[in-house]
View 1 (cartoon, rainbow, N blue to C red):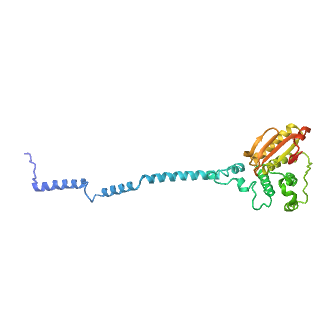
View 2 (cartoon, rainbow, N blue to C red):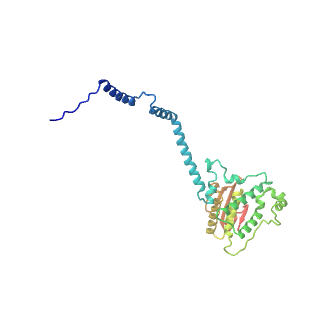
View 3 (cartoon, rainbow, N blue to C red):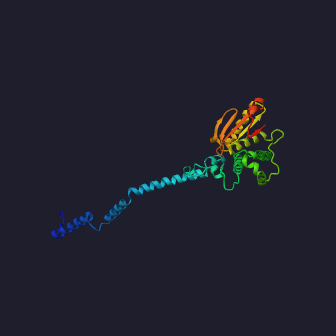
Length: 284
C-alpha cells in the first residue's frame, strides 16, 4: 500500500510576515530617496568638482603647456652650436630685437666720454674693426700686425684731421710713438701677406671714418681682384648694409661716423694716376 505525503500547513499570519519582510527588504535596497545611501554622497562630491573645474582652469593648463614648450625651444637654441659669425649676426634678434647691436655696444663711430678728440673715436673704431676681422677667421700674422701699426702712424694725420696740427705731440705721446712718418715702405718676399694686409686695412679704415682711399696694382685684373677682396673684408667686418655702390673700379659706403667713404682701385697707368690724385690715403 502506497504512502501518502505529509502536508505541513503554515499559518496565514506567518506567511504574510515572511513575504512582507522580503518585500520590505527589496524596497529598502531600491529606495533612491534614502538619506543614508552612500551613493548620494559620491554623486554630490562629483557634482561639486565639476562645478569647480571650469573652462578657465583648462585654458590656463593649455597656456602653461605652451609656455613650457616655448621655454624648451629657447633652451635648445641657446645650447646649440653656433659659429662666431652667427652669434654676432644674431646679437640683436633675441627677445624681439630689444637687445643692442654689437656696434652700439662697442660705440662704433661715437665719441665717448673717454675720447679726448674725435680722432680717438676714429682710432678706437679702427682698432675694433681690425680685432673683429681677427675674431672672424682671418687672424693677422706678426708681420701683418707690424704693417698695420705702420699704416696707423701714417694715417694718423687723416684720422685726427684738424687736431693733428696742434695736438700732434700729445697724440704721439698717448700711443708711444717716437716717429710718425706719412709714408710707409714695405719690402718683403712673396707670401708675407702684403695684399691681405692692404685689403684688411683699407676695409676697416673706410668703415671707421669718411675718407677717400686709392689703391694701385700692377695690372687691371689685379686691381679688380684687390677691390673685390677689400669689399669682402668690409662685409666680414659688419659693413654689408653700409655699401652704397660697388663696381669694377670703386666702392662707396657709409662709415660709422656718418660720412661717405670712397675706395678706388686702378692699374698703374699714367691716366689712372691723374684721375686718382687727391686721395686721403694712397697705396702703391
